[in-house]
Image (cartoon, rainbow, N blue to C red):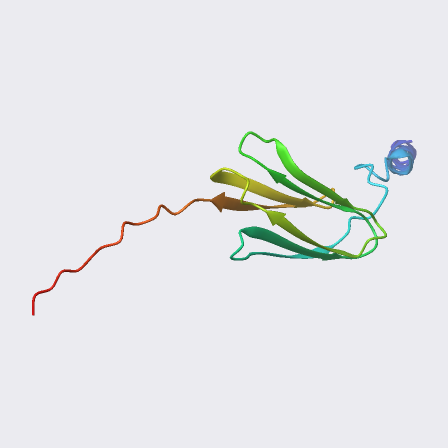
Length: 132
């Protein structure tokens, strides 16, 4: 009788685990579209522009945002799933000195780059007086 009871208990436990696993949520993050993988190149030039080159796969989308320290979005561009690349040149000359955040996100991963703007103060010319 004990053996029969133990066998039934084990069978019930296994079936309960199987039923629980079949009712478990198969997509816990509710992510329906795959995230796009992307490569970026970020550089500046002498004219004071911030240049962004982005190449990605056609699946998924990517957003590019430039924010100030208060979190205000100054620039926002969205690349849809059918777009493969973009080249952006942002004129940074109109922005005040300070620290900005460039965020590039595919909805799952976000990469953040810090952009610092600082104006060099002009130095006063020094003059050499020599006696020969």
